[in-house]
Image 1 (cartoon, rainbow, N blue to C red):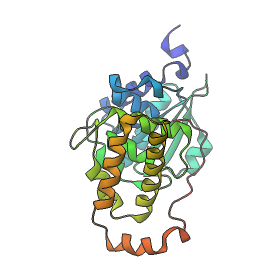
Image 2 (cartoon, rainbow, N blue to C red):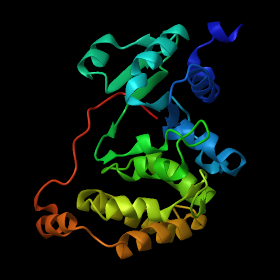
Image 3 (cartoon, helix red, strand yellow):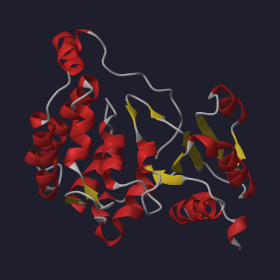
Length: 252
């Protein structure tokens, strides 16, 4: 059976890598995020303890590249979710595999879920995946972490070095510079890092993730805070500090 006749669900990590390569060959700015991005970024540093089934490929692309990505995906056999894509206004696109439950979720120009993150800044950096710091932030911004998200975070936090300038290193300074200007983002990250640290302390999470968790928490705490941050902090949880993202049936 040729690849073209097989369900995408049988080869999603391979499809993710090939999608980025094909996009780049066409001059499109595309990077992976989500579980497959983490798997490919870590390579032989991915701990098999965090292996899980993958049902989708998550993509982030430049604001001007959405149409090109649509054409690329259709040409590779992915079927567009027409109603969802129309309602998404070009900012979010969804494609399905006609032969399985696999899908591609595309964020165009902006990443906005529970919080907005400036991922476009990283589209020029090397690799099929967004840098480790960005992948960590896309998971930490989820207000209600599920088991899959915690597993992905532990894989990153235990498999990446802590430092600056390397796509496979977690950069506390980059993360802290964003949270120092946005109390809501800071608060969600703070809550999730505390949950992850509690998991490490209880034995649920790997001890090897502890150093990265502590480095991020310390960088956030010591980062100078903007005036807007301080004003919003006075209101605290009395006002909802996050958005309710649109529900999409996905597993990435």
